[in-house]
Length: 307
Ligand code: CP
Ligand code: NVA
Image 1 (cartoon, rainbow, N blue to C red):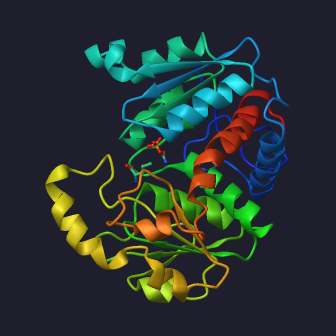
Image 2: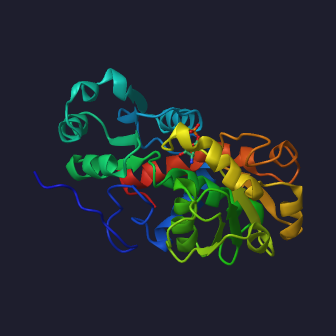
């Protein structure tokens, strides 16, 4: 069986999979965000999934991703089929390859949240329907789509904006770097030694949170201990990352118009203060809502090739 290949660029057919965000061209990303805004204004405007099913495999916990995909697929007229790996034959040794082959005979697309990125790549290599990365250890591209949509709403544009991510150089930071670069956003990542993002997509790397924040349009943070991190290192992480908390002083170092972002779940008092999390400069709850609108546009693009 020939695995479906990634299709790249604005002049070719739509990307078959969405694993890192690198499958999209700048034009396709801009079109997807335009479409997400249309779908936000008219949630039932697209019925692209009528009579079709989308499998949503969860090997890790989720609140926002599960709810936004389930509600989003429903709004597109489809049936969201949530599959927990512990309830599948995967938990008894069935391969990812065989799982991909079987699911592809039934569903229009497969979303997966797991740890190792190799699992998502193997699923995509064997599936004959689009595969969507709903979070791995290294990537969270669906989150970055919603974040860009939120910035676009807040500022009316993306090109030329500066986003400063402070904290752990993790999956969320990497996806912001990849998709931010595609959208013309300068992404700066401020993290301490040992927790810095690998050089990716032209992101500006520093260990100085104040320097990153100066002149920024948005400050972003995420948890200090991710689902793929060992609990054994949690205390060390909290000590190392404590100077990178998103608080009012950091927000004051950014532009007066700057907004605060967080993908959630948040730990108020750790990576973000309660005052910023619930303050009038945050757009965090918009981000959570925008997961649904952005993912609906993504599903439409992948399943129907609409742009
Ligand atoms: N931001 C995000 O992915 O949240 P969940 O882990 O709740 O899905
Ligand atoms: N970096 C976090 C994101 C949660 C949405 C994690 O991987 O757990």
